[in-house]
Amino acid sequence: MKAIVKHEAGVGVRMMDVPIPKVGPNDLLIKIKKVAICGTDVHIYKWDAWSQKHIRPPLVIGHEFVGEIVEIGSSVTGWQVGERVSGEGHIVCGTCRSCLAGRRHLCPNTIGVGVNRDGCFAEYLALPASNAWRVHPSIPDDVAAIFDPYGNATHTALSFEMIGEDVLITGAGPIGCMAAAISRHVGARRVVVTDVNPWRLELAMKLGATHTIDVTKDSVKAFIEREGMKGFDIGLEMSGSGTAFESMLEGMYPGGRIALLGILPPETKIDWDQVIFKGLHLKGIYGREIFETWYKMQAMLLSGLNIAPIITHRLPFDQYQKGFDAMLSGQSGKVVLSLD
Ligand code: NAD
Ligand code: ZN
Image (cartoon, rainbow, N blue to C red; front, side, top):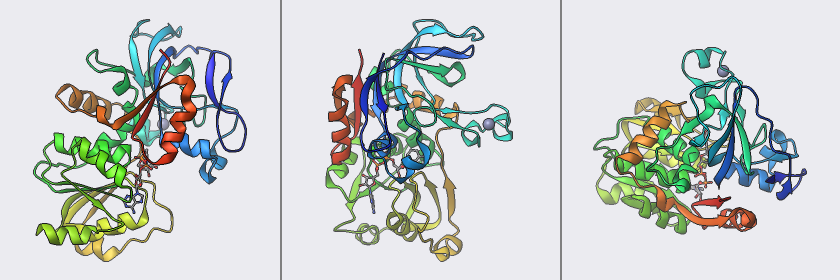
């Protein structure tokens, strides 16, 4: 089968012919219809320090997909050939304390599809049936293909009650933009998104941000003064930038709540006075709650949330290089590649 492979230690990925994966007793074999490129795939493409530490080529990359079940492992029940599925890319052990307590997203033994084992940028993917998500028939394939990052946005944005609240989102990447859409959908008042990239700030407006701040020319502090605000009630950190996080801490109203998805550099400073004297709550976010976040994602789409404008590029699978180039340019939202 055709697959996009990290073929060697170095920059780039290559389309190659690889064997169809074997279907274990607990697996589903999924014929892939559409995939989407994640920031993680771009890290692997660039062969940055993180990838050099975690990726062992050759590896079929990718973890965002929608497809159709074509074969069912001998021990699997509850699934039928022909069902349309997306899936959770974090494969957990099922036996640790986190898993047994229903906090599967916090399993310390997590294995990442397309990171620690072969992924979905291929004609077929073998996935444990316990990781599959049945996609509602009214949801289009391209939206189902981005359930994974939409799930990151959902998990983060729904961490705290938002009705009537002023929300600050730092980082207008695909996840920040989708979080803006979710925040509006669930009833936030101001949804203010920051970035250093004007193209992405425009995208955030298309997804439903009420205001944007280009922090190369303006600041969160100046915005708060102009609007006559006292500060933000909720912060969603989605840039992975230490300076963005510092401006967020400073911009929070006392009692504010912050959810941190962006992976901050270890040297990021925290002004503890902001946290302690303002009584802020900080919550780290990893992955998606399995499967509570997925229920909420699907329910929001069925009740009118529109995240489709985050898909800015639709390309045939063979044109993956164009897709990676779009991601590298900074002028993209989600890039979806079609195999069908
Ligand atoms: P992305 O890199 O596409 O988006 C980040 C955005 O932040 C970019 O548009 C960038 O221009 C912007 N940015 C950079 N510096 C900034 C600054 N000082 N102020 C404001 N914005 C700034 O990433 P994404 O795919 O949307 O993901 C968002 C973040 O979440 C990334 O850091 C990613 O690594 C992280 N992530 C974490 C998890 C998790 O489980 N915790 C899962 C997925 C992604
Ligand atoms: Zn576990």
